[in-house]
Length: 122
Image (cartoon, rainbow, N blue to C red; front, side):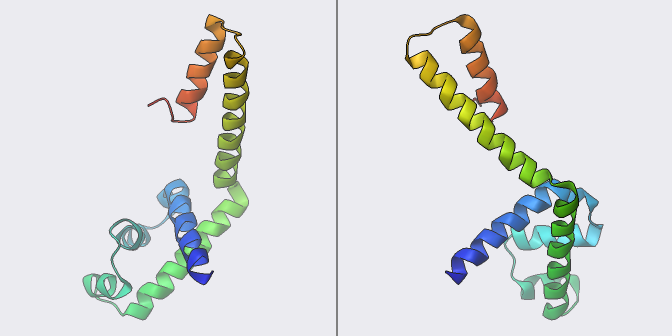
């Protein structure tokens, strides 16, 4: 179970970085990208940045805490998740309505807009 929790936390940290990464310092961004996007180990990042592994570990923990504080204040990730769930629900309702034979150009256009908004129409 711990491994699942670690994986979920890693995914969450990456998503938070996607939303709030622009608010971090250049050094924080560089280390986060090396760790999350380039999948470098703490030792590899430390060597590349000329610091200790512990310094990188501490920096990543501080950045994760900072990202969580941003989310607590701004709630962009939670809002995004809520909007995706609502779009999915609307898409399902509309698809069922169309499947019942209620075919109208406006419904088809609405369905296309919803698919585009949910990034599934691309």
